[in-house]
Figure 1 (cartoon, helix red, strand yellow):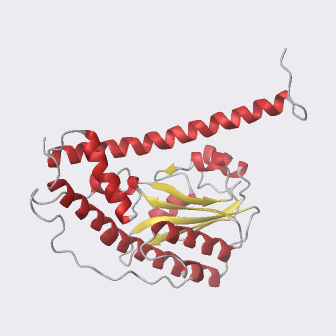
Figure 2 (tube, helix red, strand yellow):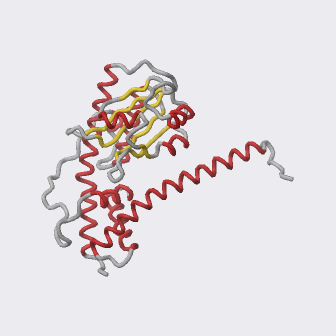
Length: 283
């Protein structure tokens, strides 16, 4: 006979165990996705530099990641997607222009440390939610290997939401439409808007969102590098022109900063990795 702890019920214990198992599954999925990409980058580095084993390649990735404060997954993504050096003994990016870090004018970004991508993403999310007037939202970045968008920052959303929308493709969501059209998208009522697939709609409604607004993070050339989305707990009639203009500025400034980060900080990390690998052991 099973005896529950005082103040608990069998149903409560079962629900807690179910939530724990769901969290473990979400963590395993995230680790598996990152491991696959990192393993691919390790293989490329081993072949390019004749490294003796996968551990040597991983050490190069880890040290470059730590030195330049670039997420390991981001660095691996760059190794896989950026064309390799012209020759093993030549610089990887011999003629690239080095530009100063762009200024972000919105208030939430003023205390972010230089070259800090995580801080910038947190700031753009905070500022967007402040403009829209809600406490639920997320930031996604474009996946350079698989396409689509991946969640990088989120707040106020359920674990099931983050798991379901951890990666989104080209259709079935408001953020996918905003990325495709490179334009802000407002969903006034999640329950009725045809932009969503039915599974996506169900997860959003279960998270307590009844309306949402997505803002693309764009370069000066109009390329979408990511998305910031605000979720609202009631249907809305739409945002004001003033709100849309402010969000346009946030999206454009953040997009330009992300482009600078990819051309500067990430390439610095790759060049360092390249130099270290040339001086490392050969198999």
